[in-house]
Length: 403
Image (cartoon, rainbow, N blue to C red; front, side, top):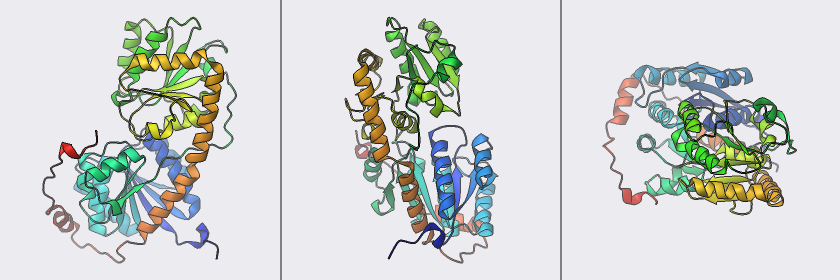
């Protein structure tokens, strides 16, 4: 007997709680997941702290979007709002992204009897995530990389409520031929060699290391240029740093772009200089576009990049190692093209977005079946108090944390 189609399955209504709504890896993940779930007989309601172009796009796709404050210590008004949404719209399961959303989801799960699933997008699992997870037996956790999975087990997360579902990337009909689009934007000749950084300009991403690497390569006779695609709290600091390093004529900042896919073919390679990562979507996008990568060996990055086959892995906090690896690729075009082709095949074969969506959809559907049907809460504040009361301060030994 064949498996039932999506149309034959009961419709599942998901409350998607977002801890943020800016442009970044988590938001890209949610956008792709939601758009993949809708045609699979899911309905999605979004609860997020503020409106943004991403929430507007999700509303246009058919989601209901509600805006409310989501603090690390959730406000009672927000808890009431979420419980009301679940009762009024007959929501089946809750999916949370980021720690503040996880805390809210766990409290609401305890009140309503709906299962909640929190996706941990980085390698590190916060104390708030752990506290939320142990608040109710209906709380499940999914991680995007093996490094985070093993850390969660070491910290005592119940393996029966822990799931590993890797991020996905759309391959589609991506063009991998060189394009002059980024060169036109930057005002550079089409033949100029451009090395890219794609991501938030935030401390954990190490964009300052990218600039220090650029300084080491600034004397290269090929007149190599370096572009940072993205924005974040370090933008002004980095622009000042480029001046102090005397590389302003070689470094370009584009800010946030919604056409990154179209810009990737203009790069010869991409660099990830992060101090910490989960399974970075920007790196996966570059690999899917057929670009070789030079990346720091942190978090789930070694699960993506096969050293010396689809790219280079280097130690974190080492701009010289980054520069040496980039130079080796710049000096050897056949190697660069071979690594880029291998990266594309690896992304296509191991992390298609369809597989990520299928696995998440199956898990959400499974958790939806565990909902406590007919749960009514006449005094939700008492239910929340009862849920929180048994929670004693949690002590986590550093001995449990993998080195």
